[in-house]
Image (cartoon, rainbow, N blue to C red; front, side, top):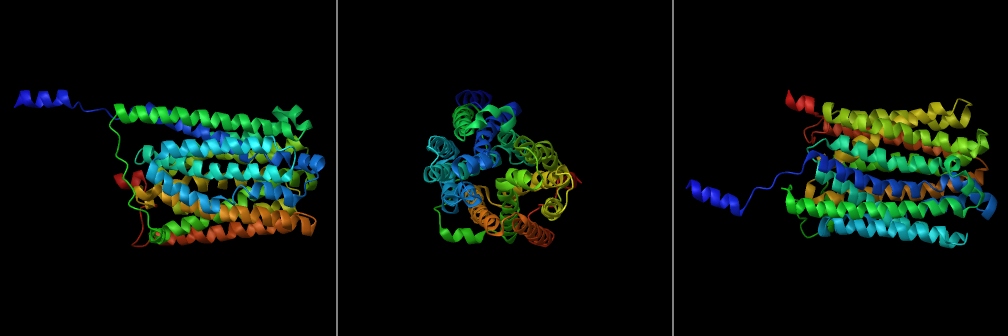
Length: 429
């Protein structure tokens, strides 16, 4: 019997689990892919006044360039989520990232024509959001039960370095801002970095599958559109918080540097730096808030606190001469707290086999808000001849986010809760 056991052991050796460092290397490369993605997205804001001066673009045109990014994702990200669940993260992430490179190239080599710049941003958006859904799914599958929220926080930190680099490009790439095309050429390089990082992830994932014992990924059943409506009430509260929160943040960023220049009379470099403080706070605090939520739970309560911080900041900037660093710091804490807790909360609530679909649905609805409010704010700025109306819209969105976070907490404290309020400390008690 002992010989038989030994013989079987020799025939079918037990593979070890991936080393801890291997998971963190996966994290680094998929996060570098998101670094490039975030750089391209945020490249328009510091360029807005150059586009106005050199190409004669109005605020509504600039709103179009950013808002059109979200239009294909009203349809695509749900399809992308289903594709991820059906064909896997490797192929889907590669294809979506390649689309980002194509879109960035079209915009950079558009000849300054609004139509072609918008087409490039649309193609970029077609790939970018689905790429984020795929990478979010990768994170959920490699880190579920293993520092999940902390890993999400680190992922966001590296990704937001891309935003920080883009918003500060008027400083470190100042010479390129003499012409509208120069800063956009950097986005092509950023997209190339993203694609290279995804290729490395693909190789590492294949190696891990062959050499390590991997937690099996459940296969999604044949997709039925009705399953979208089977998600829990808590999931839908998170989705509503997601759309109101991001609609208050990203459309504000679209016009923020121009707003800082026009209303607070700062230079383009100073305006880009002050906006980038939002990313600095997020880079520093997202992993810490993720680690904290892993330990103590209280996830919906933390999302309530982040939403409450967001409500007053826009009116402070619109009606007072307070240092911009104060409202941007408050916004930065909210921008650190909510995403670091919100995205991993979905992995806790939703069955793993439908995780790609859930993230796709969530991102779909988020992009309805991003498209609508980028267009709306550009239009509001043009017809009102200023920024105050837009600031009221942003503040109102923050208030609705607070309501949805409260409803999420109420749901999770009830009998149908999913454990969002339970942390490692409480689970071990």
